[in-house]
Length: 256
Image 1: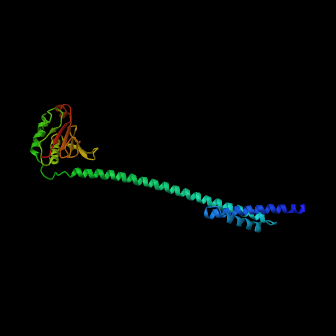
Image 2: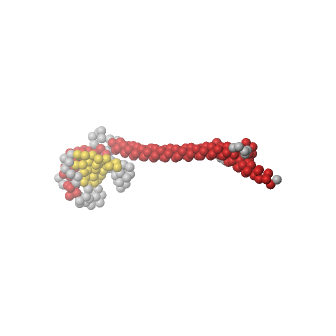
Image 3: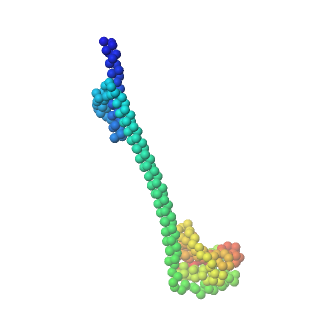
């Protein structure tokens, strides 16, 4: 009896091995298909089936081993494919992020350009189509300045303080007329530059042919200390600093 039992021990071992292979095979197949392990019921069923079909002398167990290896390879390939898909997705997300960043940057730049253009157009809305009020006065004032005599009046009487010119119904046109006349008597306005302000407005700076510059600030393009209806002209050259306490001459053109 002991000898007979000894003969069955290898078969029992093979059977148990077949059951184990069958269970792992089921897990592998199910994972390859669904990405999840097989259920307990499916595993038990697979173990019993493997015992009946593969745990027999003459190569059954070897077949189970080959089948397990094949399934393992399938599972491995499936995992590689899944990893590759995830990597592709990550790359796609990175590309989308870069593209989104470019779009945001483009939007920001477009907004800045649009805002600057709008401000420039806003400045150009100044009505200069009609003859500027006080044009004759401006001609006389420019000549006085070139002769070393200050024009306009200060509120505090101090040298170097802003000086107020006579009020008109169109301060922007009057101030611009003054700038053009002053430039003509000082070798011309050789260059115009648009300069943005912190409050979103812009003003025009003209370079003078004989040195220095003159700023034309339309109404609303000065500091908050100046009324929003008042235009401003600022002359910064050696001649004006010499007669204005070494300070830029600031002329205010209020609205009547």
